[in-house]
Image (cartoon, rainbow, N blue to C red):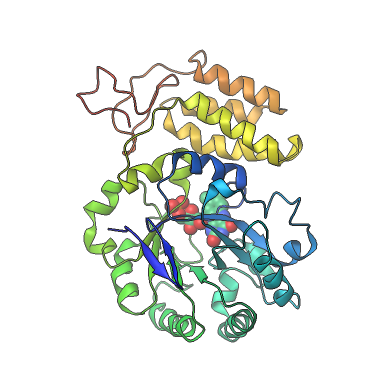
Length: 359
Ligand SMILES: Cc1cc2nc3c(=O)[nH]c(=O)nc-3n(C[C@H](O)[C@H](O)[C@H](O)COP(=O)(O)O)c2cc1C
């Protein structure tokens, strides 16, 4: 499953995509993922059309992209501002290479995003959505993706959803990522994977499935839900395990240490962001990364409490050295949701593991 996705004359292989995550999927994080490989395309953080219009793409960390990242999809948040055409032209002119696809955010339920008529609010407003798609398609001929949730009303979402699928087809949308939750739901309630087959059967556009997909076993265990999809999009699991794409792609494990991975992202982030911005981003990442450990709450707490970058780094290194953390044994494969002790080296076999290996 998911060897490749062919759309608009492009091949994304494997058909595994990084989910856009504001505060996390900046170029430094994508660079870390590229060190491990195993994906078809990475995605930027959500770019506000207005902000992007004003910033200098040569210096902005938001539009920055490195050759090592490979294919990158740029996610745009817009309500159809007057500058939309200029923004599309600026995106298409990005150097050293233009976006491999542009993804329109139609799912973000955050009140501040909906208040400016974007994200889930744009998905809701059929006429404006049509106008935005028409304007984008009139000035942009490249691969166009959209990312949405199921809609607003759990009791009556299928007809409006079908209407929007028809709209996407009419305007040449090349792939639809569906995160099967409703706009009123936070991330706690389980994503409704059971809706994937109906959605995929309802459109000729390839559907990329997203939401709570944490391991290849999740997908294998529910082939009936996942087989009709054109691809998978992974989000939080990659902030916890930046090597996870390799597992989904069936690539052999790559040895590394938790401390080294954390520190590498720290270095990459400092190359792109000034310290006062880098610290927030490292804290955000550390909140997910700490979930690899039985006593990860100690790392999480220490990270939250750090006042400056050096304090954050020392706290993290202390934890990884095992001084502040617990010393529980690593339980098994990192492809499953098991937790490690701070000094563990995934990809290296440990004698106590029933031959399972940590990779
Ligand atoms: C911190 C964070 C930031 C996010 N930012 C965005 C965003 O900018 N655009 C978007 O479409 N979705 C955003 N999402 C939603 C994710 O793309 C994805 O749909 C969601 O996390 C479910 O996938 P997962 O279970 O694999 O993480 C964000 C999610 C998180 C946790």
